[in-house]
Image 1: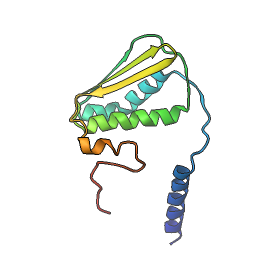
Image 2: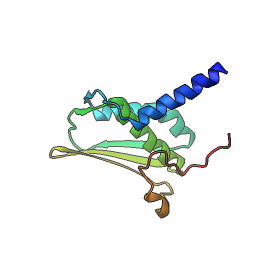
Image 3: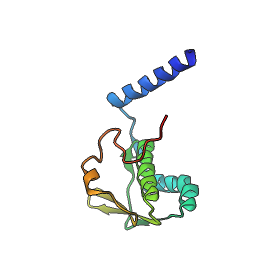
Image 4: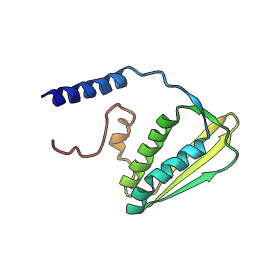
Length: 133
């Protein structure tokens, strides 16, 4: 019984973190290194699909002030979504444009149904089938 209460407490704590954004410590990172770390992490999964991941850097990219782990999680989510959408190739382009950074991630997967696009970015939204408990 106690372990179930601990589990419930953990779930509630995680929900509170989502409900009340925490202040994250930002530091300077080379974003290309973050993406390369993600590519290395996902290589076994990419090989199993198989999906090729290509990274292109068009010009010198300065250090980026960010929370590296959060940005890595964004990259992981996007690349995994591409792989799961039957993409056999994912292209990632980095380009500095004046004081801005452009990151383009595209694939040749099946795409997103038009009726689902309006829900992108909603908390907890997923188009994936939920497994029964």
